[in-house]
Length: 253
Image 1 (cartoon, one colour):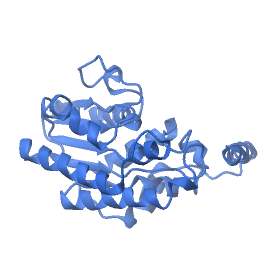
Image 2 (cartoon, rainbow, N blue to C red):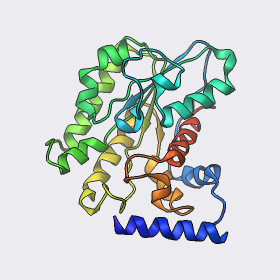
Image 3 (cartoon, rainbow, N blue to C red):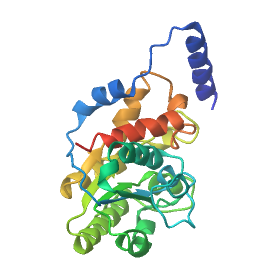
Image 4 (cartoon, rainbow, N blue to C red):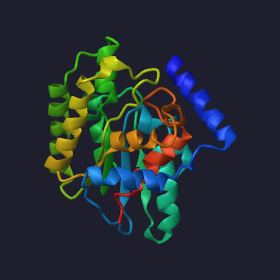
């Protein structure tokens, strides 16, 4: 907590003195891109895009709203920012963009609601960001999962998805944490690296586009302190959500 406050004060002081270099999200993404090779996909008319995950994806969306393409249904995080950019650039494609993230979810909870929150929507592009709670809730004593359970459940989820939606295009986001900021402390490591490795390998196994969010946030910290990008090490600030949205858009040709 003290370290994050010191970082914030230092950042604000430098910014006030004009000594802080301009922050460029495209530069951050370009610097982190060579670390991973990812697939790219194109958009087609009438496609349905579905965002899935936990609170990072949920981000205050109205769960009583079954709709699409509105801030009410998409929340105020990276799915909404991503959708706004896509809809502005591709007005001719008549796309439908949904967000069905739910705060607190772990992989097995996605499985439990997949029939209504995925299959019923019939997405053409399915974006999943999941894994932080699979470790975080273990550390706070409310869950007893392991990396092996995370991997097994995730593979089972995607195998089931491919059986029902064989043509769906997958985008998998890397679970990330900004170390030293509130929630994300040394207790997360080295175990958290195993979850990230599993997500990368699962993306490769299923031919999914992979978004290396950890590398992206690590690079972003070279431009501004972690508290500029995330309030607690997990949940992004508005700047962090825009960073995530722009990273997601890199998967689209």
